Image (cartoon, rainbow, N blue to C red; front, top):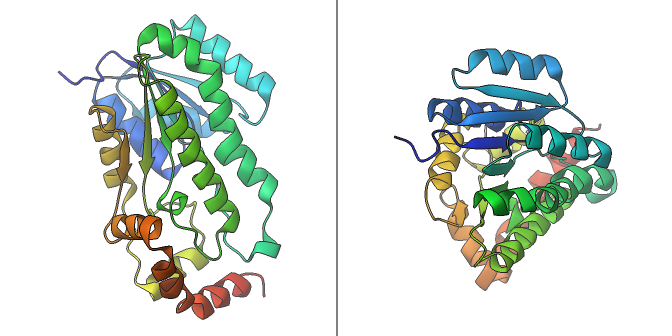
Length: 261
């Protein structure tokens, strides 16, 4: 029997490319799901595809009032055992083209607030939190300044919270995929990855790795090769990564500017 069977899992960003696949695989593991997202139609369509007990709660998580509504809904269902902060957005463009407020709100502030909000419940259930970050949470990449900043922040928050709760019985995990074949990546990003020779993973495979981490004691999981090497290299010898990305800067700028001209 799966370790997730009978566990109640709250999944944000459930209708996105990775989120929907995670929901399907968790359902197959026998987990009881509470799915959130902004579109009630997409949530209902996903709910109808799943075999295990699945509840939906459409909401805008950038609203603290709607966060409280989600908390009350989960309390009415007997609480949760797992919180997966998966909701996120990306922007590709030069720094002066980006809108930082939405990135910070959705990618960083919302998961921080939800962790804070659900901690008492998770303490009671000896549960776990899994925050979905990115390889770009460890590697600052041109064209993704805002996205990198939020994912760096989420990684730092997750690490600090994990250490703070080390003796509490609540596990806090960080999951970092690389580029994935979902709609979060614009056509410009897909073309750029092709030009740079960067691989993109299928959301089905990424979701399987996430579920695997949930059923293990692994606190940090980074996906992709050579991305895992670059993560380590950037931490120890960032100047080498500086040089590697500088050689690609002209191509990155071409795609970043080209999407608006």
